[in-house]
Length: 149
Image 1 (cartoon, one colour):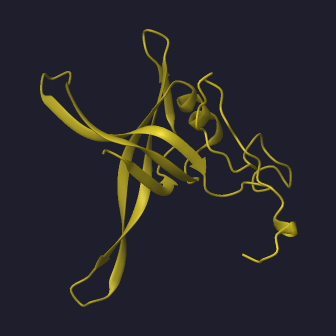
Image 2 (tube, one colour):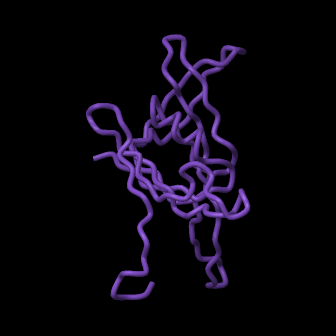
């Protein structure tokens, strides 16, 4: 089984492009904290910068609704690939090929003076149904729950 689940912040704005055959592809990097123990026994957080690739509708969704610094949850598979650069040298990378993505924080009022900006006020999974449509759920009101967070 090859499954990667990452939660972190976008290290830079997503970059979208279109292949020669018209397919959207979005490249972005997720900065994830990794806790490690120092020689003196204390714990320190270190950031790992994980390259990710999304295709088709997911690429367009990520490019539209996420930007540098946003918290994101990504699941997908790890895939190594290689290519030859312009100088003729062989290059290698390992990326997460995105299957699903979710918002990790509400963006209500942060950018537009108290009004939602598009879907940034919703917590949504971009799992795609068999028809190619996004299945998203709005962030429901928590006031009716019988417990506190």
